[in-house]
Length: 160
Image (tube, rainbow, N blue to C red; front, side, top):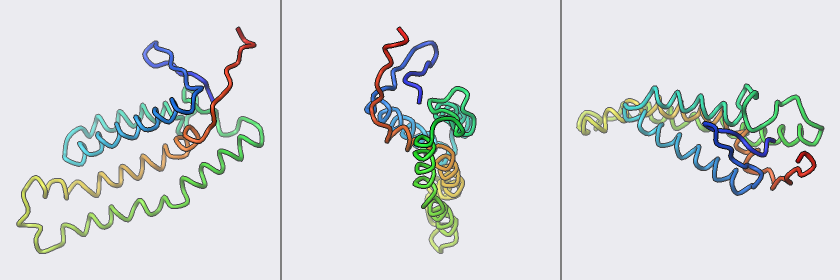
């Protein structure tokens, strides 16, 4: 795992577990706000752009500029940690799709027509928002688990 990353020319030290945990919280809080706005009918393009940036930052499927190394690299212990993170992330992932199915059923009740139009718009977009949230979790959760659980890293003083 890289101990620092560069964002707009500014260097951020990620050796501390506390800093990495704050980064994960900030990323998911920002995505949750954008997802809520997209579900309300705003910021769809902004959500996609933010997701692409976050996926590149966390590593996702392409590891060229992310904080985490490629899946194939590292020793047996690192590969075991990554396998465990993927197992934990995807063990119950299928249950994230159930709220989207339930949201589809909200439109088929007898009171739907009496609801406020803003609430109807939100309910109409809710399945889409929940599916996007499920996709975001599918793509980023293993990397976030690794960032969250990795202990503090020692700084390498031999290179200076």
